[in-house]
Amino acid sequence: EAVETAFKLAKHYWKLMGQPMKTKVISRNIAYHGTPQGALAITGLPGMKSMFEPLVPGTFHVPNTNIYRAEEQGYMGKVTEEAYGLWAANEIERMIQMEGPDTIAAVFLEPIQNAGGCFPPQAGYFKRVREICDQYDVLLVSDEVIAAFGRVGEMFACNAYGYVPDMITCAKGMTSGYSPIGATIISDRIYAPFKKGETYFPHGYTFGGHPVSAAVALENLDIFEEEDLNGNVRRNAPAFKRTLEKLKDIPIVGDVRGDGYFYGIELVKDQATKETFNEAEAERLLRGFLSKALYEAGLYCRADDRGDPVVQLAPPLTIGQPEFDEIEQIMRDVLTRATKLL
Image (cartoon, rainbow, N blue to C red; front, top):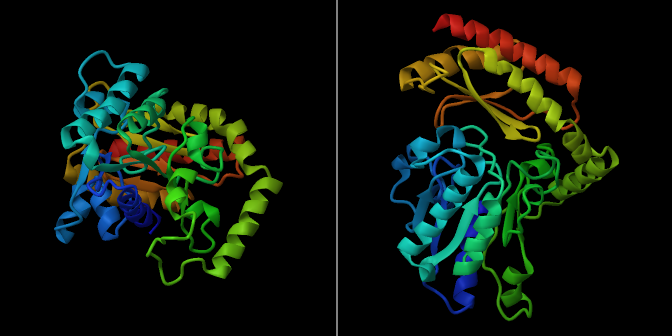
């Protein structure tokens, strides 16, 4: 709902600004942004969309920040963090130019892309994206439904990566999942045409602004500050990364990537060639074995095949090294058993 709200608001904003042709949206391949008609159109997962077509027109997709599979994204050249990040950002500019800047309303990006397995941004990526959006007068929407509220050690993940969006969408973490809530946060720029009260945004949901969820959110955010949860994540994130990277000696572990307390472990048939599993093999590996085995071993995580097979980890923001070690040992045991089954 937060993404749907941002999509509608972006189009409404440009109409109020005298640019009614700015209705198109750019997002990234394999990115998930929601299931309503507009948010689903923005989503970059064809398998989730085909049964509901035709969807809202005017959505376009560009490569994501999965540097592990840079060549498959269309990148050509020496693969470095800086070069790939700049290329991926410039693909947004190329799409804006192809469609026409006077038709593009917004770019929707997650700080760390969830679907596909935790793709963090390369250094400089969002700096360049912000420059592009400013140059072509396009709104930047930071979809932080997953990344906001501590997942990378900040209330809003855009702060961790040094960019200021025009809108932020958020949800789950605001109440730590204890009560349903979502929000679309807007900048002064977006608020300006509504400020004088001469127009309004004709949009809403039945349970919008529900007082119980709002009360839960306020208490939850107080606890964030009282227990310094963001600080705990920032202090311990490097250790979490080092602990998970120990798993790279397991033959089917191809990549360990992420940031903060949000990581993906991509599984491959061959580490050297990065050969992935076919659809039947992935089904057998993820749903036939890993999901159940990890759960039974006491590790609640997600085995995701929206893209290449990945095990995703998003642990509680309260944990530290003892729990990291336990996660690593469970993963090691289960992934080693999985290797022997192949």
